[in-house]
Amino acid sequence: MRQRRGQLVTLDGPSGVGKSTTIEALREEMATRGIVVRQTVEPSTSALGVFTRQNADHIHGHALACLVTADRYAHIENEIQPALSAGDTVICDRYLASTLVLQQLDGVPLEFLLNLNEHVLMPDLAVILTASPGLIADRIARRGVRHRFHLDPTMPVREVDLYAETAQTLTAKNVKVLVLDSSAATPSEVASRIADAIPEPSVASAVPPQPTTPQGT
Image (cartoon, rainbow, N blue to C red; front, side, top):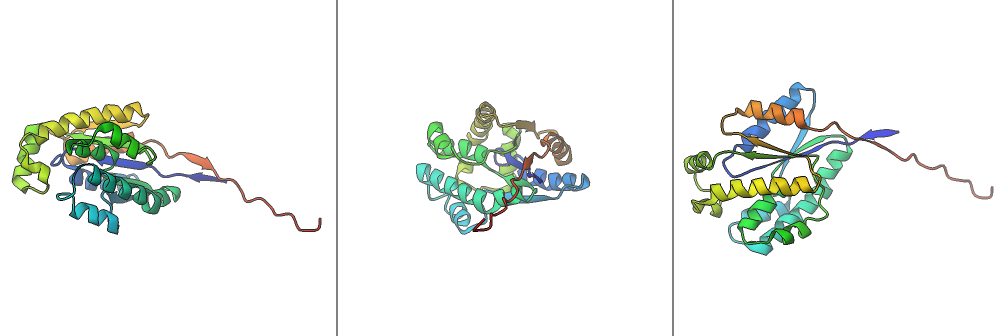
């Protein structure tokens, strides 16, 4: 018996880069290809994820990094891995790349973050959306401040640079990374490129149950 494993696709990028609209366009694109996806987000919608999201402006540095990663391990165990085992394609809004960027911006060393996430499930495709820092700053200004990082006017430039470095870090760990500039592309165009880049699902052999030997034979 051979069982098809689903694919984990993660989307990360600076605030204001268009992740939400891209994910919605990707869901529609995948539907046209006959693929139903399961969408999720980090921090997750679990009690731990909600606590992390609600307190991200008050808990900083190493403590926040540990909370985010603890939620990720639980998220993988309780939601992502079961969906993949069932053969579903999972699209996650923010994942490891965001941790390697945002927690570094919060003063946590990269080595600590890599060690903390050493055993997390790596994505089959890590998409990193980027755009010009000026465009990102304009979008944040129009929609309003949603995070303490947005109070720093240098943040768009720093985020864009760190995401570029993170793409190289993940590539060095044999993760398939797709970096897309959304500055001039429509969400539908970006979604089409992502869908084209998703690897073919892997097929694993399932070990059949072994027959039991009757006692006394």
